[in-house]
Length: 285
Image 1: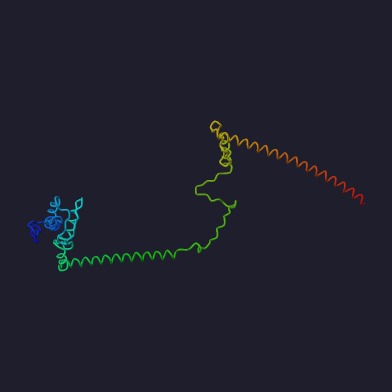
Image 2: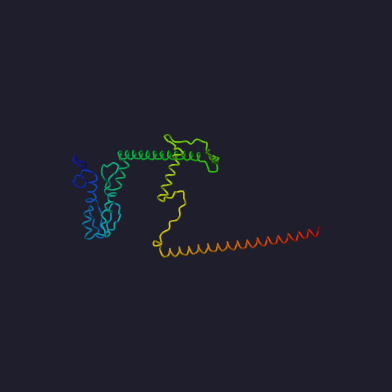
């Protein structure tokens, strides 16, 4: 392969290319050697094999390494092309000076070419430096985390170690203490406050407004807005309350009658005992 002023010349033909990637593709499609396993046809390049496979070739083998590719129902050309890039048209990714027709020549170039070995050594040094920096960063992060964890453990106080503080006594405000007012506040006089309360009371009575401090009764809905089921429940509740009130009145009446009877009996017994005692005393005397 020769280098011309206008580009790169192919070593097998007179074609000239502007970069190594284009000449690598040219080598794969026009100069790589593959063999048809069905009829033994040897094709120069992948393009010739593709034309032959339409009528005959099913399986194909690489002449350089002997790998076999089975042509499936789908197009198997990309897989064969990828193999030829690493076997019969190897482009050196480090030097970028050209491609090699077999793995042996490429390895020989990697071992003997000073430019290649120098670039490989520089890449290895750069890789080692990156690993060293990554390791230093990891160690710094671990040290910072350990320091933060240590400070957190030292500042932590368990609930059983927290001293109990006595509750502050409730402040008692005496009626003789002067109240503290905000600046600009003008307290009202007693007469003015009483007059305002009286006017508010008159307004409430006039419009039927109940104070918020007064107990509020439950709102009673009109009968025409209550469902039959709710009406029946309300009626049963009223009947139960009336029966309960009647029973309580009856019990009170019975209790009062029994209490009156007991008091009358007790008074009679005391009178009889008094007479007996008097008579006895008289007899003794």
